[in-house]
Image 1 (spheres, rainbow, N blue to C red):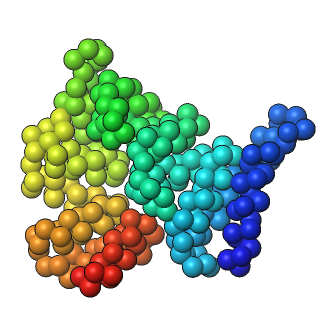
Image 2 (image 1 turned 60 degrees about the horizontal axis):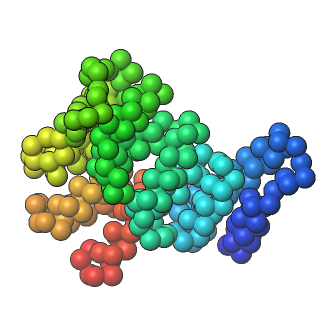
Length: 261
């Protein structure tokens, strides 16, 4: 099975590059869509160990093949791999590129992620005015509160205090990812005064509502900083890993190797 998937991804990558060169546009679109779906499905299986041995590098290669075919879920997955350094080197610029591609193809969560990217300037390109535009677009597409409007936003003088309002609005609308990132704002003081307690409170809410990344980060953060019982926090990381969170899998692997688990 593993050999079949590897061979399949190689074939998919080649097909993505050359598919449909002699067909009409509709045929190319349909063919690429099928290629993208197959590649994404193979990547997902490798990333989560579904029927095959877990292999993040192979997952990334499959996702990349799907993204090359223009499949939006694969584009978002490639961006996440680059964002977290899963199966490849961490590269925020590459993450921004693929998140933007997924956003342009209609993925609301990628629109929100682009807002986060610009708010924090993770790729070295911080622009809170652009962040607000992305947050507005995400809200209009179901990832936030579409009725929220902080007033006229001028490009000049638009800073983190303005763009964080959009993050807070999305969090109050029930966007669990926004709750996680609002917690991050309180941790590093981006647009708000740093507040360690609010950071932990919001991260706990995100974790309670099922955000596996919040469970992983909160558990690891408390573990490494000895905020509470290490073994109990380790259970949070394990639970996140069971939910399929790849970052939790990486942390657990690291902790196992260092004997801290």
